Length: 295
Image (cartoon, rainbow, N blue to C red; front, side, top):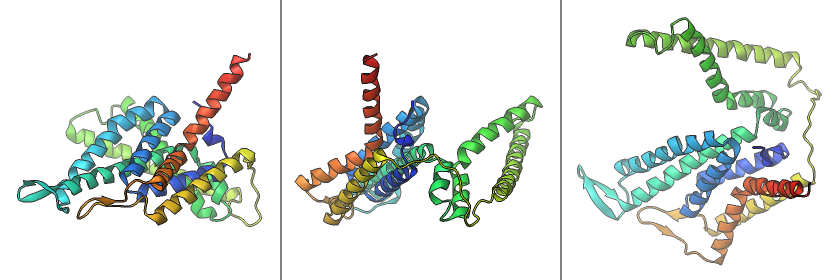
């Protein structure tokens, strides 16, 4: 499914994800955490479909539960003691904080997966190639490290399986040797690929002063309106942060501000910021459906 938000100017994409990821990391209020997790799940499924749904529900949500359960076993702060395990108190505050921390952790991971799908390496180089050419190249290569190496290790494993040297062949010791061999081949390929990439970019004059490069990105009216909306909502979040609407104390007891009209406005603004990509996609789908109905 085509993502409308991905088709916007790179500065719009980067500004959005920078704000969303930072807010998701530092806003520990339950309302903000809930909005962030749900919005991240919705957008990741919209971007990657069934694959993202399986990954989120089979790996991310169980990881959330695991992190939430582990925290009370090591964090014994809080005044509301529920029970003792080996003379160690399990407190209500530590359980709630564990759930909040796990939600924040999983939300950030899912948002980064969305970022990796939308802000491609060419967009990143377009944004920072002239400012920090060497670092932008390294970062763009790092961001595509996981999917690229995951695909390459499958190729290597299939090739080794054809000659009977896969991790599924032989006894335990032989499987370990085959696994080490596959990793060794992958590392060798990675080093050779990095050298070839560096030589290729050097031959193209990457990073030289005055060098121009082709780009098909244009900052149009739609980009201006979306970027203006994002910046306005970011200012609203900063305003709410100054008023303490996004803060909460978990220890020694849970304390947070009562919900007021201003709180509700900040909550709605945060939800609107998170759902901008989904809203754009829904609007585009409605537009196309309306145009098809006229045919």
